[in-house]
Amino acid sequence: MSEFDGLPPLRDVVKKHELAAKKSLGQNFLFDLNLTGRIARAAGPLAGVTIIEIGPGPGGLTRALLTEGAERVIAVERDERCLAALAEIAAAYPGRLDVVPGDALTVDLAELAEGAKGPVRICANLPYNIGTALLVGWLETEPWPPWFDRMVLMFQREVAERIVATPAQRADYGRLGVLTGWRATARILFDVPPSAFTPPPKVTSSVVEIVPRREPLPCDARILTAVTAAAFNQRRKMLRQSLKGFSIAGTSLEALALLQRAGIEETRRAEEIDVAGFVALARAAGEMSRSGLGE
Image (cartoon, rainbow, N blue to C red; front, side, top):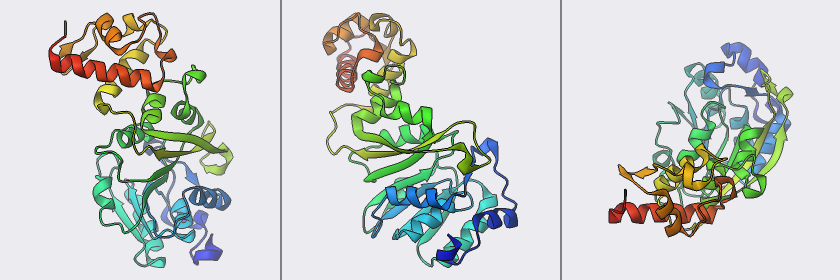
């Protein structure tokens, strides 16, 4: 990429700033320019687009996003060691890269995106140790439709498979598949082998595209999360058992009454229930809680 942006090769940047990847931060640096460019193009076309990037590290994907024409990149980086390297990229792209020191789990990304003239997208090689938590937070964003129009994210392959799973893929289907399927459409774009990273992880990674639905089935996100988590906590058991003792806002709900209200057979298992079925359960739980119909 240095031939395009005039900056040193990433390996030289890492060596200069002594940026050994930290396992505690879930870091695996991606040096393959063909792959960083491919990820950036998957988030495109980027003309007029503001990108939120999480965990840029030494800035490989950051440089690709800017090279591919992103109007602006807002990079949130927790590792202070990487800030000097990112500052060099910002200097090479005046006015187009904003580096925000901080933890993406606590930074208000919607606030950072305020004032963007065009679409806002999230594109990132997410740190493995917080990727799922970040995605769940973005899927639970209120109000909806959200402040972003697309997410292109890299996860471990097994996490990516859970994100796109439906009841047809019972082994992978769970809370993450329900939440994603409820509010978005998702697909795996391509895999990235361990050898592409430094240090190489022990697993294959996958790039996933997630596009928000404009009008998902009406439901309280918090209740859907809670009822889905309870159901899959004992995924091999019938719902009448896995939802026993389920409660909302301190109100314990009788499992059989909840299932009957949602129109779901008590002998079904969580892995057999589609997104619409879980939405029906969440809505029934909310109605029962508000009406004081708990045990």
